[in-house]
Image (cartoon, rainbow, N blue to C red; front, side, top):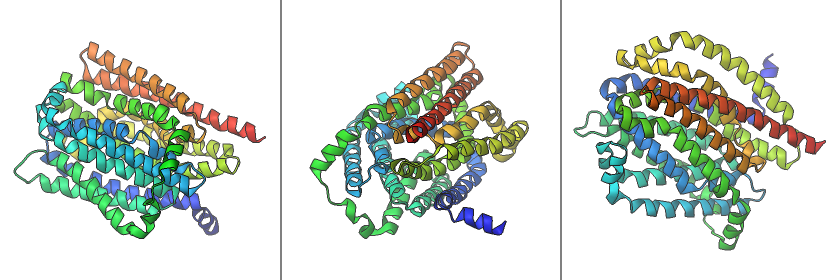
Length: 425
């Protein structure tokens, strides 16, 4: 048995997932452990403002990168991959420059969301987009070069910086501590990562070949054409409850919803993102070498469901009491919201961790169709709650619609694998 476990762990893919997952677990544990303190310092309205800032920022980050960075893993040659990095950086810098021009209009932008306090912090948005966007580029370069310890180091440091800044800023004589922490933590983690990796390791990225940049921009044009609209739609609709329901129901209920998303998707994202980063690189390698992958994905589906379904079934009974004990009595509602999300979380683990198959098999156009379908189903759920003037119905409809489409999407992803297997035979 000991030899078997040793053999499994020494498999490169398993070891890489373990490296990222162990760092993610520790990083998420640090982040979550401070929330029982933060929820007793900051109000639900403070968290509602933070959720709105992050929702807008998440959409802008996608627009800034145009999804070019997702293509960094795919080229066979390092030279071509470097050119994709340069195209991604140019897109990010150009968009950040345009975003700075919107800062004088922060008050009208805040009025759109009926959140006057947003105007005081909107000036930080271009910097937030720049820091997060640059990490996205560097992250995919690390994935390509199998520097998974660099990724785990960033995740660990960001969690520590975020927790520390949120605690420290709570005691300072100005509001917005959560947003200041959200801006500074990715900046500090990014600088630390660049310092640790050293200029020597990044030196190959310095030389820019403009003709090659134009060539790869054409070769991977499907990313801005289809992947970017797909991700943009996913982000906008993913933030639909925050963007649409904040003006209607106020920041308090949206703060509860944001906390429900954080507590539920923090562990889910931790696992699925670690799997995504390693399996994306590995699957691209398998496909480039014309190797079989169907058996792997069948086993993967079976094992995920065998673990997740029993765990979520038990959690159903304890969630409201658990969140009330963890965060404080007024946060009991968070557990009730998470209950509605459990089927969605199950489907999301499978779909999110394997969504790279769309890029590996160059099916970005079909992937965009599923995002449109997801947007429609979520909008119907939220719209029903708005018509009935009931926040709980809005988020329940949103979660149920998400579960249905994510489940269908994963079945389609498996069909891509089956079609690939037929080409091999």
